[in-house]
Length: 115
Image (cartoon, rainbow, N blue to C red; front, side, top):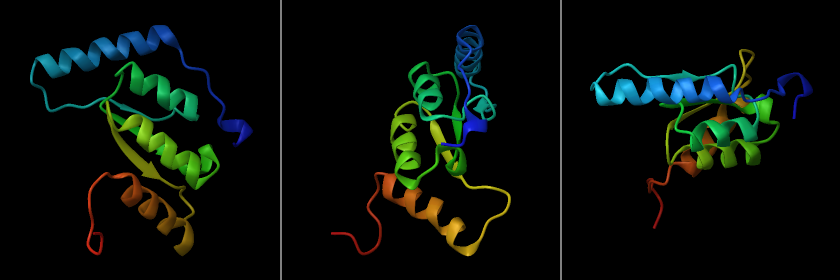
C-alpha cells in the first residue's frame, strides 16, 4: 500500500453522509454521493460500504497496491454501492487493462465465452 494514501475514516462525517444519501434517496433525487479522497484504503472502502454512506465509491488501484486488493474492494463495495475502479492519470497500455479485467471479473455477470 502507498504510505501517502493512508487515511482514517471520520465517523461523524460518515454519519452525516449516510443521512444525506438517505435523504436524496427518499426524495427520489437523481443526485448521487460519491466518495473519493476520503476513501483510500481497503478498510475505508469497507467502512463506507457497510455504512451505506455513498452511492458510488471511487476505488484507486495504485492506492490499494494490487489487483487482488482492488478486486476485494470492488466485491466489498458492490452490495451497497456502485464501484468505480480506476488507475492513475499516467496510464500505460498495461495499467489501463488491469482495472478493466478486474472490473469484468468482479461484475458478477456472465460474459461472452463463459459457460
